[in-house]
Image (cartoon, rainbow, N blue to C red; front, side, top):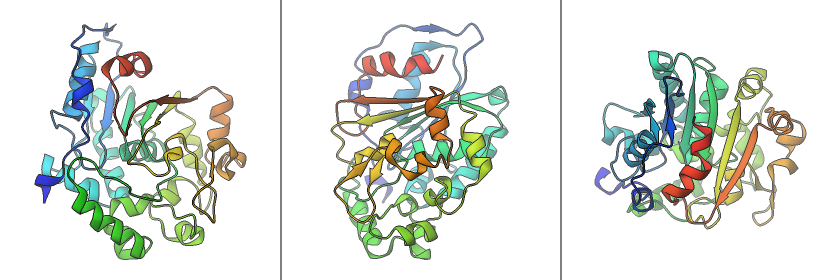
Length: 303
């Protein structure tokens, strides 16, 4: 099964330019934690391995930790589909707390679903402190659709799509399917709020957890990247924390138009007013960007 769980194809544009270091660390570089997306792994040389190498080339002396969820790359890839997200977040929190290189704080960059998973880390585990969170195509209000899957994972996606359509909020599917835990059905808002094990919790849908609200606002910057020709994430507005209006599946609303923002249930309105939110957009499909774009738009947040 794992042979067909191929990564998002980042390698092509990322590896085009070698380049020399843009920033000199001088022992003041902030460490960086990476969390990969669905169907990928921590260390694939064509994706996250290439990203890690590129950043190390651009920022001299930086410590980059690319998270492995499991004991090996195979487990890491499979866990992106089948391991309870809350367990994954707990595992990562423990790993970060035990890493002496991170005790002074770190920046975090999540790719696709890794974006909302790292936000959960920021909300639940303030020590060591996360300074800047960069979400690259993350789905912060979840998804309502699985139009296309990465690499050659199509038959697995067919299985996932069927499970989501037949019972995304059943205990069995919620517990054993990662994508169900951020499935957000606008036609069944009550079911979502009651049974979503992960997203409804971190988005304060059931009650306001003041600790989550306080911890997220400790971020110096929360950067969200949207891919304008995205064929994987539906709706693409979720990459900027927007989503579909409830009760239908055509009209969308922005973060600023949402109840979450208007009631400031998560502190995002306060962060926005304080200039802590950044909304970036780039042409291209899901997770497709050039090294030049990365260096110009994301690298400045890492030094």
